[in-house]
Image (tube, rainbow, N blue to C red; front, side, top):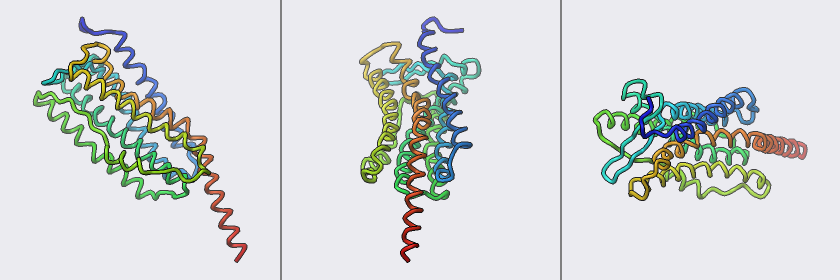
Length: 265
């Protein structure tokens, strides 16, 4: 039964983006499996991994529906989702999982952006590099889930969000490959999805510093941080067509150059 201080409107507002995210992630997963051209088959493994993690994250949000009540000394996480129908451990489990998947999503966005630029330049990454990258991303972030759950079981409160600062700093140094791919610069919008994480962090800090006691802010911390579970697959689906066209044209140019050099010989 809903508690007296719960707001149905805010609860529904939290769940609706997650439902959209579930649909778009399933669509992205199917497109990556069945509509990926041979030139992108290796890179698509990152899309598959990201879509799967985002799908799990989008499914976790309705199970949690967390209101984050922050104080300078501690943070109280008040859940209104499906996890309340089970044991308290289930809510802790969902909280740790969604915290981990938020940072995993950020990492996959950055890694995906990096490999997009490599493929556009005609530098196709190997299957081994892709698999090692996916493995590294998951292994690095798994302790966040385990540690969060273990800490909550001891009845401690933590309120910390992390970000892959070093990887983002490295990506700042990346440049586009000449004027011939200026039409692909729209892909940079993928990095704007990270703003959702930044906004969630700002909401959290405003609550911790007691700048506001608004119900909206308390409910918005987790959903806004999790909004990338919905925006990321939408961006990937939108950019599939121009990205596929560019990748195909780069391959064709390489083949023409190879044929021309062979004819000269």
